[in-house]
Image (cartoon, rainbow, N blue to C red; front, top):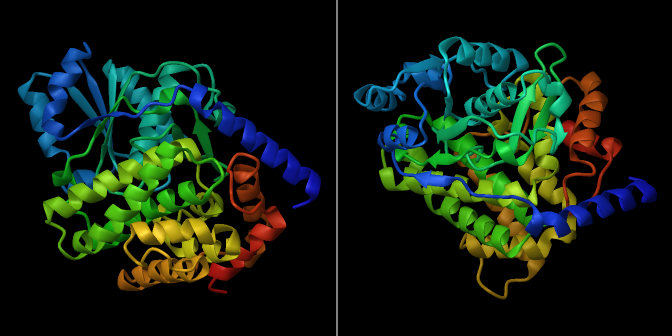
Length: 400
């Protein structure tokens, strides 16, 4: 990246960091069970709920406890289960039309990050019906209160239940973009481990590593605060302590609960401190090839950490301490190597490879431009890279 653009990016990021204490960040209120939602909904004087989820969640029966609780309290509800892995503008428009048709006044995003992003998109369309989603990509373009928005994560990874972002894919162009504004932060986050116990191993591992990526990128970036550092370190500790148990013993409620809380803390960390090039590259892959976001993050994470080099060694030392991988006083470069190797070992244990076979060589320049546009100047990464430099990551994980 040329010097002038670097100066612009760092100035933008510095101004944003200085602004953090003055911006209306908030954490969602945590609810421990879906059974508590009917009273909460009634307290908010809402009378009709749209549940946004996907077909696999519905088939697994994960919404049944929520449906039963709503029925017992005479709260009408409608289910939209058409959300796809990377939710599209078409998903949002269909669900928003259903919201209006059924006379709903509250939204529950029930599922992984895709369902919660779709739910946020619906909230935006209801709040701003005359403005298409594409006109609100970027930051601070919504600035309108959404209907009551409740997030019920069924995966411990995306952190979408905490964030001010909705990631949407254009149904026509397949371009994936992020909408970021404070009204998108859900009012309530339901961290109910019982809705995660039947998750397949593959989803448990990739979403868990998604949470790890959130925590790591938030911590190594240049816009950390005392609070986001604390949240990121706690998330890393909880993930290293619990992810293998959740993967191997899926019905372990304690491990599932701890992973949900890890995802929540990681989400709180990156909501303020942002992510980095792992996410920018992963988003471009998700938009172009429909690659699950957690999988893309897991594959890419060690490659990007190695590329940052010694600029992050001290921070990786602190992450390695939090993960109980090293002792105090370990040289920074050694601790960094141990941490990155631990991430690689985690991938191997979960059967996550180092390549993404869908990548086409001829697409790489276009994908790198998408990543560059998303990340710069917003993401306060340790080392700035332009589109040409970002191409290295697509080549590194390409199977061709």
